[in-house]
Image (tube, rainbow, N blue to C red; front, side, top):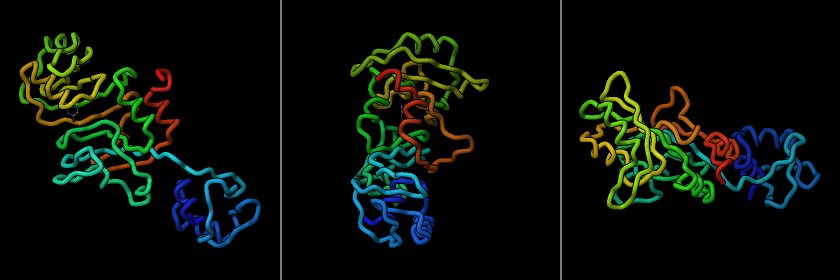
Length: 236
Ligand code: URA
């Protein structure tokens, strides 16, 4: 791989910044300063940038504010896929969505190429809570909270006890669930006689969308930080 590509994939610097640093003599490969951005390097080379070793990044973690209209898949014949929202510079990593949000659901969706991480976030055994904001067709009632808290039996799975929070506007609620089964939140509201008109995932474990984030926003996160924030480390 080219030296400038290696550095742009392994750091947060832009290709332009990297080219300048290389030209300025800030980069060495196996102890020798290299000034040609096209120099071929591999993962086993000792690459230093401004005196600091740079190791190749194997995994990437992208946090997307999913817009409606995209399916949580890497390819689909009919619909646009969330991977189409991934910036070109991450294309070669082969990221996939961690769990699924319905085509009409918005909100927090992680994309990664780290299968272990994805498993840990989605496995019901790890009990990572997923919190959703929902707008309903009719007001939620206080007694609905008890129905959510008791857990719900469906023909294909049993939903663990969930938390329902009703805002000042009873048609606007938050639901916190432990799993991520097909249409789970919509089905849970159906059970209490409501239809979900709008659904947005606002957090996964301790990870929330940044303030002011809008659908389509995407940023790269550090994997270790993400594990800590989501708080799956204690449950591995
Ligand atoms: N539950 C749903 O019903 N839909 C989603 O997209 C996520 C959870």
